[in-house]
Amino acid sequence: MNWTKRILAFSLTVSLAISGILLVDRPVQAAQKVDFAAWGNQVVKTFTVFQEENKDPYAMYYTPEEYNTMLESVLGTFAGVGAYMTTNPESGATVIVSPIKNTPAFKAGLQAGDVIVAVNGEDVQNQDSDYIVSLIRGKAGTKVDLTVSREGVGEITFHLKREMITEPSMEGHLIEGHPQIGYIYISNFTEQTGEEFTDVWRELNQNGPIEGLILDLRYNPGGSLYGAVDFINHFLPADSVEVTLKGKDTQDDYLAVKGDKIEVPIVLLQNGDSASASEVTIGALKDHNRAISVGTTSFGKGIVQSLVGLKSGAGFKSTDARYFTPSGHDIHGAGIEPDYEVAWDESVPAIAIFDLDVKVDAQLAKAIALLEATK
Image: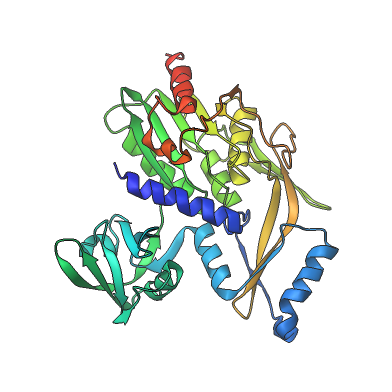
């Protein structure tokens, strides 16, 4: 079980949520390309005026680099070698946490703990992780040389070819001691999340059908609204309302589509950092009585934003609607209360949610108890 990957996913999700990069609830409006080059050095000032005049505190302008990073997060794909990396807090070095399965990094033999020392011959030992990632990523099909220092071995140079990488947004396991209960942690919603679920669900049932499912949305800041809608499709009857978007002069209902449906009992885990698309998921499953929830009240971000790309490569997001759960509940600023209020023990580090240890995770323990009671 690759706990290091999940720990990194946790740290990245939290940091990106704070910067707002994952708080985007609509896919890119590709046709909306606006040339604001005439703004020149006044672009940020002008956008600030736009933000104030439209009373949109969530509107944000992004540099080309920030915009590209945001798109990769929402779409769940990027061109690179496929390795999770983090910064060692003691040494400041950029370290491989784990390669993503079946990617160039995985096939070449990169390992957890490898310290990145050079990219294409450039010494990067004193550079920050963002800069190193910018060197490693590039156009699919192009080559990159990655030199690492491996404990007990020394320096090794890997000659890699970049590919389009799909970054997993979820991970599933069977609960130890409860082999008929499946557990899925979703770090954020991307355009790939619905398809990912199909594969994870198949793996959970490969040794026999499971009888209950825990969906962990704690610390999930949201992401792609369409990714969440696609995911919810697996659980609701066709034509059920999943979420309603209300703009200034518009209203759109998103309905579940036909297909195979998952019918096992479901318990959702939520907390104050479950936001946006996570709350769409929680609201839809609870309102249709397809799940009960455990934890604490969710964040309360019920607005929908569109991305607009500029010809310069920069972009911005702006709010154009609010979303309502199927029962008509407006969660913005209020959040969604759980069916079973279970607080997290503040003496236990939040990262412990990835240990799946019922001795320290009272919320998980309650979820398991509720599913066992359904048998």
